[in-house]
Image (cartoon, rainbow over all chains, first blue to last red; front, top):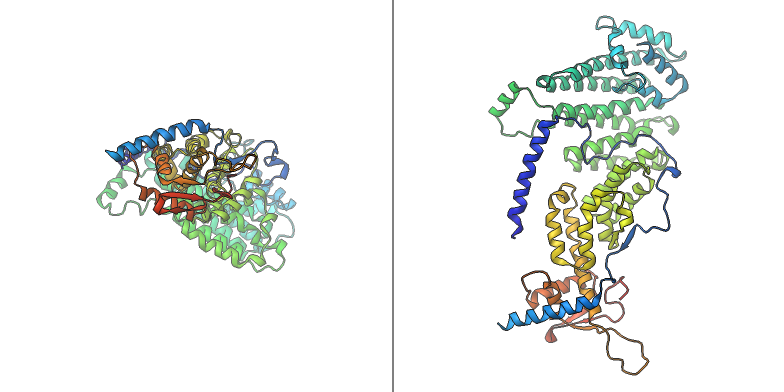
Length: 89
Length: 453
């Protein structure tokens, strides 16, 4: 909830920033920023696509077991104590 | 004038549609920066038709029918007029640029119509279709220019008078361009030529891509459905997509992927985007970046995987977009995730990926619960030498405490149970909640499916 005012403020800022930008360079760019661009060539062969390098992984698992779980269990115990204390109050 | 028609003859003689289409480009070739100027000055309004008739006659291939010849004369007359407007618009002072670009658009639209007639009435052969591509491509660009140009102060004053719907005219020309492109689309799709090699159906994907691009720009993505349904209806009667130039395949797959993505059909989206990614030209960095912008959230939801640093390294913009979230997901840092989501909100919303990324919170939560499970350690072995078994009974309070790490508020057990029940329902966690004992009993064989524990 606390984030709502900041967000709208930053949006308003962005609005004005875009407004001024437009004045500075009127329709200078033909293509819009997030538009899929025309390729400089019409056709190409397989060799001209990214050669999949088997040694580099492009995707990885979403969890991280290297994160030392010792630290985490200490942190967890600390938090548990805090939670219990606050409940007793 | 001569050089344009010589190029025409060469292109026509070789049956090279792309070379032919270069003669209708509104951008002069680098080797002849003055081509448009010279071309326009080579004749005048009174004589243009006669001059071009003679020039084409001198240059044209024997064997072109009278009908087709007349059609091409009309095309180049329309092109000449459009070039005149374009040169005027380029030189126009800012105060007059809206009117000048509007005229350019209208003249170019006329060229597009004349070309359209060439195919429907004058028997233009289908290998010359790239001419239609050039017409369509710049029709869209000139429409955007005309819409974006600031109106003169006079018209600005009048429009202030009645600003009930200031957006209505904002995309006036681009909406018109979409209608013209739709006509071209139908011209290609409805060709009855039985020999596929000679069919205008080879123009389908180029025009479809132009249309999709236009609908995206207009924020009328829903209209894409009509186009895609029409293509589907003709599927058996059309060359396969992989017979088309790679640029058309990749662009088409990208847009289909994004459309599926917006419909939350993430599996289809991933298939299409992956294909676009694999076939994309390796130097087209910006396009690859765009493909990844949607492919990364897809991967997060379908396979719960994240991009590696190696994948992101050529794309600083994507690193900025996705790395903070990725890190929090990996660490199971819920409050960090929320902060990163708020920080990137504007950009995520603009890219239309906010809602999808928000669902990544489940994965962050899964990883956090998984850490609690791992931190719980192992049962005392019942007999020496027995395989160690993780503790599978975990108090709800422990999960609750983990969730409240980093945030100032603590959660009721009821709320925590609700979150846990959701995780179980989504098959991100396996087990049940023993409410009377306020304990979660996790599955001994894979408490967190697919994560190795």
